[in-house]
Image 1 (cartoon, rainbow, N blue to C red):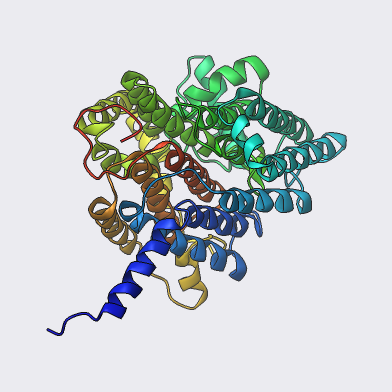
Image 2 (cartoon, helix red, strand yellow):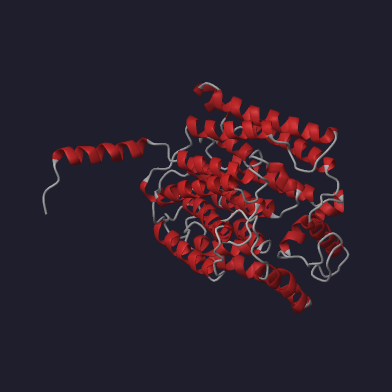
Length: 456
């Protein structure tokens, strides 16, 4: 075999040096931007532009995930943060806060989101010395999230009764739970005649907000705000840059409050997963187990993340097993009340959903080009993606979080029904993944077993 020439060796070293100096957060942020904009084109439903953007975003995310083990971890650079904030400012300036909101409350909601996004952009444009000084401080995060909270409250007031079945289902389920009734026992008015299609954690987590405020959407807003607050406090050393900006982007992404208006449960999933990662970083493994169990008990798709959690040494298979058992106990309690109704609502309904021509997925793309794929391909291809992830991903916090975002995105691309809420979880997990890149010091593939530190 001929020897490599010195010029070829120098070229390879130069390319490797350029890759090493490249901000490892840039590709995830580009993926975040493309997926966010594609998801916002038409409220998360299919258009050629929308599927093109989210597919391009997934290709970029795939490249970023597959290179995680080859690049060092460091906080996002100014360019990465700038891209995210520019996307947030422009998208919030040119689209309303919600789809169905009306009146002065809708105007206030929109204006507050624009101010919050502009404040994030201003933080990125600060001189380096000032930018470094605000990292790790509570005030910038509190101001941005406070503005987002006010915008969310105004948006809820501007849409008192959204015309979507999820709102009526979760409202009715929370009310039934508080009255001691079976949450899978009936179809709710306005819910198109079907039962609760989610796992019982969705009603359990939202019932306090229905009790106190008569609207479960306040619970979904609170979940997004908690996720942002925990991202802002992810670094115990208070030296990592960019966390206040990333904390804001958890809520202020394109059409972010549309997720609240429509009453989808993905904010609960995101808050639970952020809480899991935050708890591991703070050496609170029991709380991490509880957070992951809550995610598993909230929506069925969370279970596809179980293998990644088990092989993340900082969490590990024992804690994963504990989370699965705890979630299983909660689910089994409602199954035991009425097995037939539980299966009808939480399992059979979801499996029997027909393919839709407006799903933001490649499944729909194939249908629109005259081909109807077998749904059996979805679990097969998802299993192949999972195997690839288990083989290539580093056993670190960024590996777990960005790998989870990637796997969820692959599922969305393959699935027969993928819409704004499913893609919003991918968007939130990418934001969390970039935050973990900021606070994780090394891409070590095999940390010591049982080490609970986030810096793995």
